[in-house]
Length: 399
Image 1: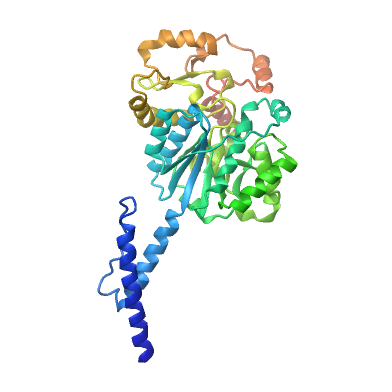
Image 2 (image 1 turned 60 degrees about the horizontal axis):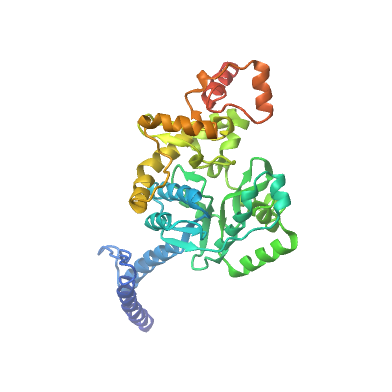
């Protein structure tokens, strides 16, 4: 009886403390305290009330300590980050959103990012200095992606998911926070390596220091962050299969065309699309009225439907915010109305741009010429070699 009385007294004291927490909580950014109400049938006494409230509070705090993180070092990647953030919001993520940005991101773009993300942090741009290896890959701009390592300094979060700014979410992916560091999907080019476009990690100053030390001692085998991270987490391929994320969490646009039957079978389950390659969605122009995309088609690697989804989200939710922030300042949104087709034609001379539906106007190539272009990585992904055309051809063989 004495023990029972003591338990109730202690519960009452802790419940009073819980009420104090509630008062403090409500002063933080206007956030509502988690609902701790219980029915009479649930509450058999103070201890029952405390248990329900504590569980609710603990779950909320843990959720608040987790975040999706992305990186933008210039205005173009900032626009990609805006679309990523919007796609996460549209699919009802319960996690915080954090954007790391370089000092070159303009103030108007920073303002739009702050509308979408819970935190926008300016960080120093790190460069690997490994220009020879970057030149070998013909991707010298990858040097600054070492800035990605700053994400390990976000120690006010217990766990994070990093996502490149050229990714887009197709459904809710909060379940990724059930995974441990370092969880990632295989890279389509070399599956024993993971692709660093999407990965789960735990922020840690100690890990950050070790990563920088690793960079100084070993460099990066590809000159970018993916080489560093695969070297540092070198046992990813063999240590723990639970840290291998399914490919649907990092569906690269390149892989769609290298294994079309698999995409036909599993593509509808994709949760994240990754626009790999030099040409990004913002490399093109878009007519919202005709929903037509124009750009350097010969180098296009993105699946047309995913590219169109990106532009629809960007033009409907991001462009209005950018227009508001830039005001009278000139800026190129990438959206071009159909009545300005002459301007698009002028630009196409410089950028070899033409509409995605205009390939029929080009000279017809022989089978040998088309084969040669494929072998040199110059397939007409938006025209004769589009996914739909290839799928039709495959269907004739698979039936």
